[in-house]
Amino acid sequence: MALARVAALNVYPVKGARGIPLDAARLVTTGFAHRGVGDREWMVVDPDGRFVTQRELPRLALVATAVDDGALVLGTEDRPPLRVATHDARRSARDVVVWRSHVRGCDEGDEAARWLSAHLARDVRLVRFDRSTKRACNPDFVGDSGAHTLFADGYPVLVIGSASLDDLNERLARKGEPALPMNRFRPNLVVEGLDAYDEDHLDTMTIGEATLRMVKPCLRCQVTTTDQATADVGIEPLPTLAMYRHHERLDGVAFGMNAIVVRSGDVRVNADVTVTYRF
Image (cartoon, rainbow, N blue to C red; front, side, top):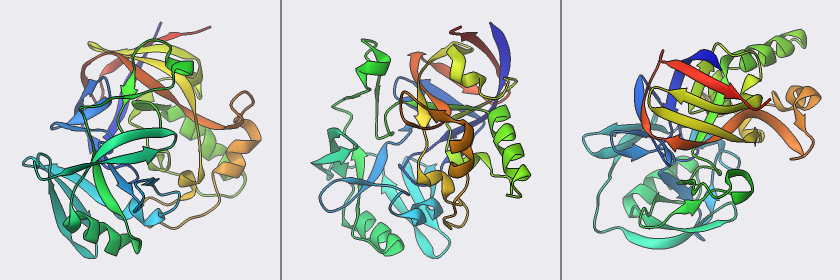
């Protein structure tokens, strides 16, 4: 066992949009929740119902999210905010696709579609996960745990150790490249007190009553090259990560660990974290 500390918590109500930094959050089976709103509970889709993210539309990074008085609020610097009621009986269910998962989403209506389409310059719609169904995580990594998630790429929680980013930034500095902030990697949970890349080797992580189990390295894509404050797309950190973080079995560049929730509970920034290793 080893002891670390929660350095940061983030929930991302809309897949691909900005997250909400939190002092405390409830950890449930599908990930962190904030005022009744789950992580990646909403998703932007094209007219065919297929998900779109910053991979295709970097300007999603400029969409701020908030939860206010029972509503999801979206905002940008150049548009009036959009309020989306979190419980609206008029929503219609439709089939949507996220990676290889075919699930049900509830369409949030024409006003939300117009707002997002105008900002992104693309015909899109906003859907909310239909909680009458479940989206199972890959059993190759979670076994028969029953783990499931909402519209996240595949798993409920993404964990990164702050020392891992420190190490990456040292390598970037040696190449004359500027340091990158943690938001390039969009983690839910940032942990201090671990050695660089220790999260690769963790089995469990316990914070108060809550327990996570690490299940799969997170393979990184071009979203990490998008400045989350400006939506400008660059090159780093993928070339640097490829030099020393290529995961041979999964054939990709890994940074951070995907986790599932073994036991629910409240989590706070600065809380102690007890970890066990798989060695």
